Length: 424
Ligand SMILES: Cc1ncc(COP(=O)(O)O)c(C=O)c1O
Image (cartoon, rainbow, N blue to C red; front, side):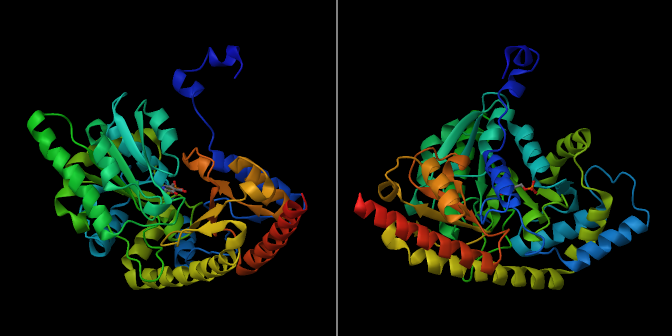
């Protein structure tokens, strides 16, 4: 940035980075608009033509607007919505914060930001898995110390209890996300229990020393989307005592494929709720009244909701099974993936360094885009800096036919590249 601009801005503003995922997605959109055959496996968004939100929700939104529900909602959210969400979370996940422990925001992001502001002083340690979605931006916004806990293909890219244990003394806030964006993997009961035990043991020590405890922020925005045979697990289900130290984040952005409707929420032990309500109020980051009123109706009708979730899981599985099949058939070229367990993502390795004679993920990404029309996001955008050939594939904006066409192009491009490698 030009000095005359940076001179006027705060250090925080000067250090602000744009989302790398959104930058890649914007360039892919431009290619598609200019008529190129590119399949957008890039954004964590949904194409409304592939994944529509429940019609009950849209009808109730229209009804609410026509009924004149256009004034400010209360800062914490409409009481009927807080009631409905609190019941739903209590029945589905065993998280019982009552309606006063539910605070809504315009998507998961404002409540995510609020949960960091609630606990972090500048210089406090914010620990998160790597790869993971956007945590490094929040480290910067809070002046926190970054504590990345690196996952490996063996840990399905999830942070492990042993690695968290090795940094636990430095941690004030630990954020976990399951199902994980970008990897599509989920904690098992045992994995999560081991992590909770590490946190609880540290908090017992801090009770004696008087140091502030470790807070667990559990981001479960993909919790309703799980593959066959996989259960989403919440920390209080495996470690009830962690309730007092846990903030849960959720949203309809992914679970109802309504990213543009902007409704998320936090579930927090009620005594800690008042400052969050104040912060959301000061930011004006509450969701519009009509979406709140419509969601209150839908979340009171759990049978309808479950039916929607089940159908959505099937549509995700249709796409994942083709991807797995086709990518699996490309193993000889150096293509590999981690079995998807939840969410809308597939961790895929394009180990094409030798075939293409290149050294970086960026070169592979460009080749996939230009030669095969396959647009993916490298794990560098999620904090994993090593050039290991790992990428995120998202299925939110593609049809089954789009996937087949993309895999056909990829297969041909790989065959041509291998033939050249042998010629060389
Ligand atoms: C893990 C995770 N948490 C939170 C969010 C933010 O969701 P929202 O769009 O509701 O702000 C996203 C969005 O991609 C996400 O992947």
